[in-house]
Amino acid sequence: MFACVSQPIWLTALEFLAVAAAAWGAYCLQRIIAVGAAYKAKVLCSAVFVSGRDPASVLAEDVAVDAYRILRLLPARVDRERRTATVSFLGLSRTAAHRPGLGATLALPGSPEPLSPAGLSPALIAPASPNRPWPEGEGSIVAPASERLEGTLSRAFAEPKSGWSRRTRALVILRDGRIVAERYAPGFSASTPLCGWSMTKSVLGALIGVLVGEGRLALAQDALLPEWDSPGDPRRR
Image 1 (cartoon, rainbow, N blue to C red):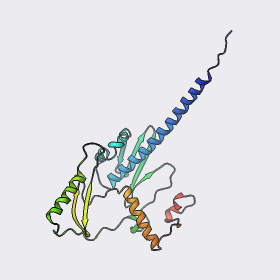
Image 2: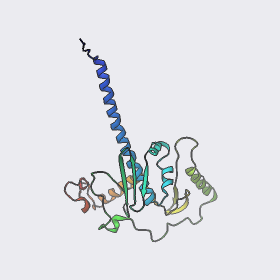
Image 3: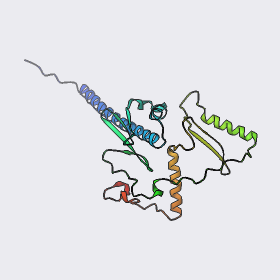
């Protein structure tokens, strides 16, 4: 005869916790990969097709340093013909596409069709280029002030001995509406478009506030663009 021995309750509980922990870990890993792939694809697409930078330089200097070193594990490829950047890992893929005049847009599975430049007014697509260069200083800065400006530029571009890299790309100093000092990192110039990152949100918020104050835009206004007006498109809100 064979006796049936019950497994201790505590052992069953441990097995359940182990399975639950593994499932939660897999879910978190999937989320991390999705966010990392999306970030890397968007940054790579913007830098290559908007700023005109070399993909290898972008990967080495922007998305694989300091806190982003884990992104080195996510393979990336750039398709110059389709103007896309795709990052894939363990079967998960994210693609960012460049649309002239509108920048790079991340295309997520199941998301609405991205806004197309066709049919949009020039004012919505890209700002007009200035018809004259920004005025420069007239040599009225005295030597001590110039030395201080030079020191400011040098400190801004100097890398700290420890900690995260600054990676300063451009610095322009204005006084009374005129450029008195400017400097650019190798490979960058005054004509290189650069991502504004969170500064963009601050500037855009200020501009929207101006439009609201002038009565040209209302906070409760929706369906701002015809491309967003189809039923069920969440962007219309």
